[in-house]
Length: 389
Image (cartoon, rainbow, N blue to C red; front, side, top):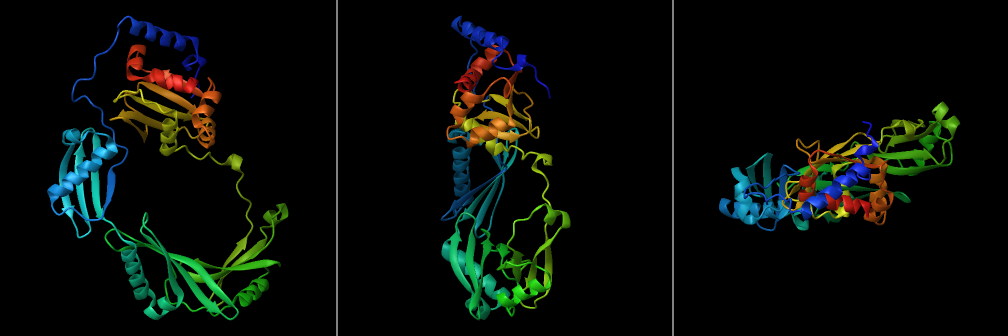
């Protein structure tokens, strides 16, 4: 969407508006504070998970804990939570309370209070699962627990299968849910024996035409233990043109050829669409700008140009800036940002300094949708000053 220079904050017309705002303020032109109950609440997620060492014993206690977390996350004062959030239903299992709230002018919010999984629990659940899947003897012979990731509730293992003068070793993992069931895995799916040694895999690869020198490594494909043998070579244009064979994948038990690997020319980066800017990147950029003067209820759009035309709605909600994909119905302003400016600023050692040095009418533009007095009252002058340095 083409934008004229008149929409830039640096244009004389915009600077005149800012000057007019300041003059108006000096003359006492000011809006009254919002009336009680006029707060604008915006949620950036429809689900919230709270991990606890012990679950509340009663619904009343669970509700109190959920609403404490709602206040902490959203910034809504504790005494105001019930004005915006109404408990719709609640349920409990052995390991989880779930409370669903209707929220004014927002989708319903599901709050899950879950019982923390300890490392010992995680190991026990994953071990038992693997023993049932593979047999106790096979599990004990080949699996060694390495670590428990308490963020993802994932048990990591080292799988080792000794071979004459060698060994077949792979990392494997099992993920556990808060309901104490297995929800993900990357493991051998049957008690597979390895009868093909590395040297045999190399010989089979050579017979298929894989050039030397090559390297052979163990890997897991769809739960099957395999050897992957590849040519140690940097591909050239001729390799891509001929789609030359450079490797094979071989079943580690039967020696069956599973996959033939050939060079395929990658798609030129210039013909690919740019990676879209995300709401997390916009949130990080605004955090680095450090704008604190915006009033609650202030809402504006951020539109990315020279990219994939992303649009984000930004709202000041109880002291925090909430970024959502899509446009605001009643945005005060639209801030246009060049995609490359966003990416480079976030990669810079000092994001704010980079923006202040590089922001100009070509890569930062603005459209005003409210009058200058309202924009000043809501704190947008600070955003302008922060960008200008």
